[in-house]
Image 1 (spheres, rainbow, N blue to C red):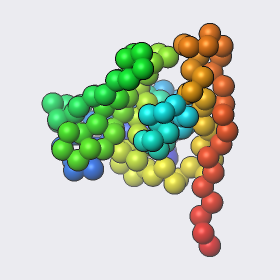
Image 2 (tube, helix red, strand yellow):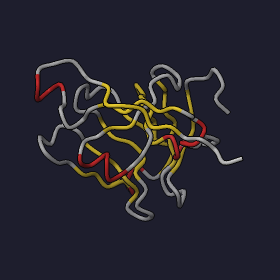
Image 3 (cartoon, rainbow, N blue to C red):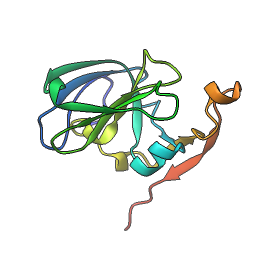
Image 4 (cartoon, one colour):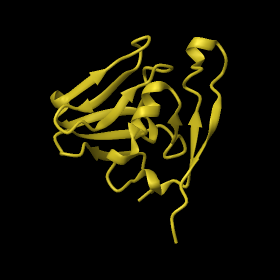
Length: 139
């Protein structure tokens, strides 16, 4: 499931949107964020340098807030968040790991959580880790 390849296929829940994501550093860049939108969305994301749409790009809807720099995409049919274009680096994308074929957010026992409330673009300081989200499976 979490092999060495950095190109991963994915889709939204209903299958209207299908894509390939080129992961920037495999699954070493997984994270959650504390900003108001990410906190409510609750997704685990992985960084990607490229997203190639195989079908359904026209089914995507986007949402922007605060500075309007980051663009968050979701399927207009099933509502699933697939990815976002990053505020701190618009050439990078955050991809919802739950949309990647064969991957679950529960595959990662420890997920770093970044401090999105105090974003580096707002504070002028480096990104800060806010904590760790831990998944401990029941016996």
